[in-house]
Amino acid sequence: MQGRAVIIHELAHARAALAAATARGVPVELWSAPGAAAYAGAGWFDALLRAAGNRAPSAVFIGVLDCDDRADLVQAALRQGLTHVCFRGSNVVAAKLTDIARQYSATLHRKRPSRVLDLDKCADADAACRAWLGDKQ
Image (cartoon, rainbow, N blue to C red):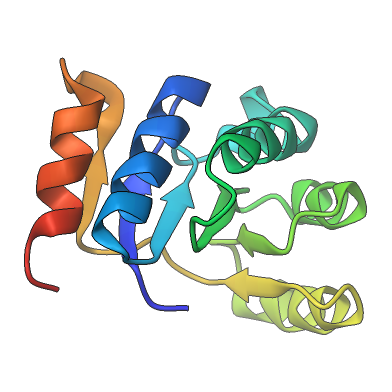
């Protein structure tokens, strides 16, 4: 899937991004903050994606949990049922994790997107998402 990337930090951010994506008829990638798997966890991210997705059932999106360089957190995310995880550790470990991810029908991302809207400091997440997802891609 190729969509604009949005870094989300809470449920309201995910809902804003999905509402804007649905209104614009475009796909979107919801990314966690860097290393969020370590402090927020796979369960939290999975619940957040499900709650946001339930409110916008026609939205086309993926959610990517950033596990930094922690292979154990990648495996926990896969066991949780997440289908997109980011691992920024060594290539040797990444090769093994890629094979494991395939067994879960999941995708291992190796880097974060270079163009992204980070909603952390946005006063109005809804307006920011509408503008970001409305621009020509």
